[in-house]
Image (cartoon, rainbow, N blue to C red; front, side, top):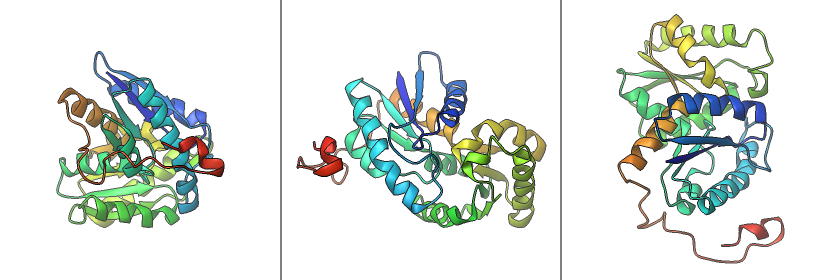
Length: 242
């Protein structure tokens, strides 16, 4: 089985970390490859960033289809391009916010999300609504650390830990969801210190795709996820013509 994990930003150091976390949960016989697109933002922290990340994601899906990839994980907590990716891929496509929220819902009565910047909380709230998690998600919190500072700021782990403690106290939650793929490597340490399950969407996404492929399940091709009608795209988008 081949699973492609797409980090929609172009920061390869983060992609390497994501790949390590993804491979740690892959089963025997599953090959996991993490990639960054050739085009896109260095980090995704706004609607503008997210919109401009989608062509790169779709290019990686198209490349994966040519190389017989079995399933895909979109490793950004905004879940950018998920619907479009499902139109292109034969195998299942799962995004990390979707996967993390679903896993968290199995582990307790309610969960809190701890993300990076406060400006991304609205997008997380949109996804809570989309995935029908309004009754499970008790709060969305930010630690105010930019994505690219997660590995550079020596105090980042301490700040994230404090934000997690605050979220548990304020929301009376049973489970925490980390709202950035760049936090994936902190999952187990935070869980040990907090004494509650901490869900990382990268690991959740990989195991979810792995399970779907094992079960022989993929996105339905009936209705809106049928392959897009062929048409001409112009200018910079010419290579995306189907």
